[in-house]
Image: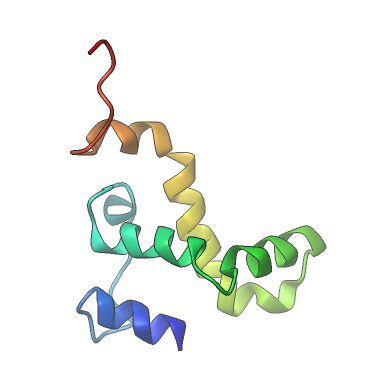
Length: 93
């Protein structure tokens, strides 16, 4: 259900559309904004993701695996993404 909501929010009807690294590295993309929003909402989506990762619950890979991979790319490249943001905090002001 959450992924249907995801596709609706980004105005995509095709779950086979690629979620490319270029999209994940664009801090202004609808996809990145929505992925980070999902991580922060209640019920705590992050808690289930973290619990599955800590316990190595491989049964969660089909449902949480793609999300975890996308989130990993976003967070791993946070510094580079931050430089691209329109609303970044400027140093030296």
